[in-house]
Length: 142
Image 1 (tube, rainbow, N blue to C red):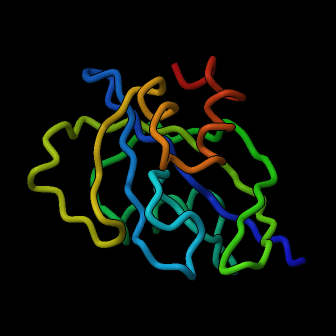
Image 2 (image 1 turned 135 degrees about the horizontal axis):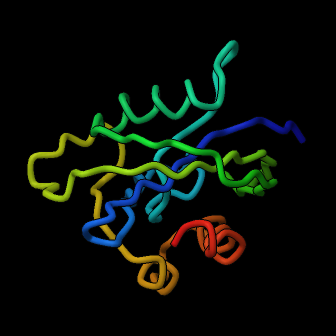
């Protein structure tokens, strides 16, 4: 089993007191298809973790995110088309002042929405790794 690194980010709007999540595309060859998750992705050769977050945000949604800080790393197991893949996830938190998503251009995923940590934890199709991460890092995220 090949272990790869990925970087993902919780994006918080302090005025709403909620986080921005993306409903992933429904493609069987990606991790957690048709599930709510975080923005981010695989680390490319020569990139720092922060470079990866900035690149992925520009590719996926292109909103202003600031005060980006690393909060946690953990091993995550994905089942993709019947095969198990181990990934080291490096998780960040950042802030945005964007609240109106009606003009947001989403380049990856089906849609975006703000949820509280409690709300996303109760959604059936929220990614299992996100639910676990919220339990582990709840004190850091609030």
